[in-house]
Image 1: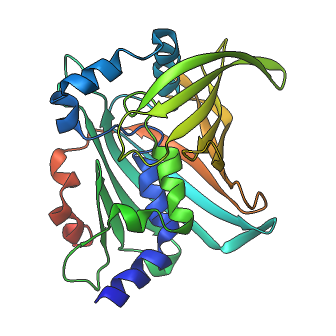
Image 2: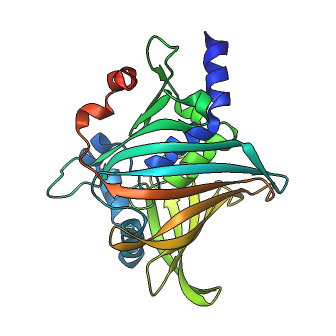
Length: 285
């Protein structure tokens, strides 16, 4: 069974990456911890550069709507500078995402990914609920849990790159302003608040005039670059200019990268019952 599960994780590592992505650009740390901060954590919260945090929150609104929505996600792997078209995947992603507020005390961060293509994967699905994840295939009796460690294998780590929550998981500081191609960007330095956050540090560039994310460098505890993501192809979506492409580079092999493209983004009323692991087994009925 262990070998079977490992095979599942390796075969679908890009899909696992995608569901990390679908809590996409937008996830936050466990809500129970947000509501029970101890004294030390409360002190950490005051360390933020408030201007930096405002910039990050503005960028969050650019990256995602704060109401339930649905979209198509296309993933294409590039290896040694070549498109690996046989590994292209198309996913139908539904998600409930909003941060804690006066209207929604606990917030929410759940996503449901249904496999569209290739045809051999139809009927398969993934469910993400904050830090929990399950995989389901019609040939399984029940959904299989996917551990955090398994999600960080190879390209799966792209999921954590894209899903990293800059607002709640990191202490932010505004470093200054830098030229970004033909515009000016804020450069922000982020340090993780809690040990369980995957990446110890992030350097983040956001356009000064528009609030658009441009680039994020994900760093080790020794400030060594691990991954780099670019936010590209901004289009008018749901009343806001949003990135429709994210490119995630491997720092050691820049000719190895993954392109993630968003399309057909729509607001949708998504009942909570769709985001229970038991629902995965009813998808094909």
